[in-house]
Length: 97
Image (cartoon, rainbow, N blue to C red; front, side):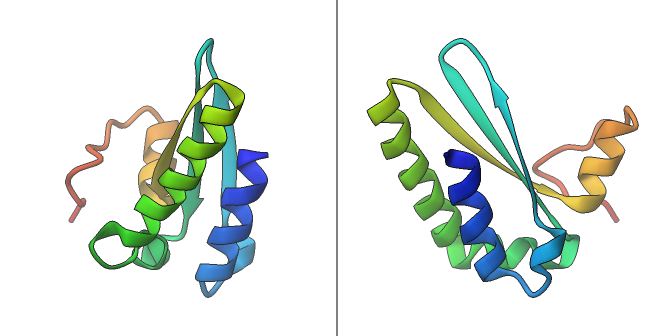
């Protein structure tokens, strides 16, 4: 259910909804929702001052509380995700030039 929620919100926000990919990593107590969008559309998903991302995280936290789980949202840029899959470490706090 968290996957469908994040997918529908992200697709409504971006210009190329077919490029949105959402995956789930489930642990013992925690679920991580990984949202991958095109590099140029990350700002549309995050919103001004992170308002949209914070709203999605709030919804996921409420959903997790009902289920007795912690649900975290990771927003991944397309290029950073591809490098991570190739084994190249990319800092989530620095943009590559």
